[in-house]
Image (cartoon, rainbow, N blue to C red):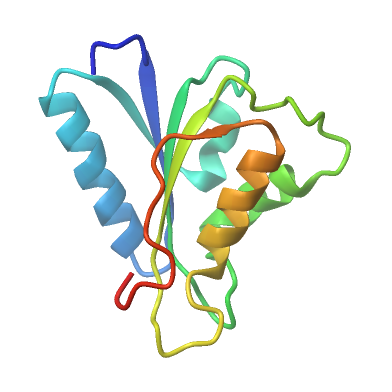
Amino acid sequence: LGDGLGNIVVLHGSQTGNAEAIAGRIHSEIVEAGGNASLLAMKEYEKMDVSLERLVIAVVSTTGQGDPPESASKFYRYLKTRSHPKTLLAAWSFAVLALGDTNYDMFCKPGKVLDKRLEELGAKRWVTGASGAKGE
């Protein structure tokens, strides 16, 4: 963690508390390892300075028919703004942990949408996860 990452932002979008709990554990692990980290609900994204962040880890659950949780909807609307420059998040490295149930057709859709949009806005994928893995 001493490789110049600076403050690591751990975001969560949670409906039932699972994503929040996992994000809390990730945040704790970073801090216990000597890193500097912030833990924020996605609805609090305005507390971040998107131009200054270097590493963002997002944990998001899936609700309904592949929708992001209500606590993440404001952040998703912000990211979907088409007037954003393609370099808005060029300083970011990111990782997305999507939570969902494989019994549903739109399994982990909010995480997949977030991953794609962050890359479209210039962010670089820090970790590539499994896709389509059972129990992902």
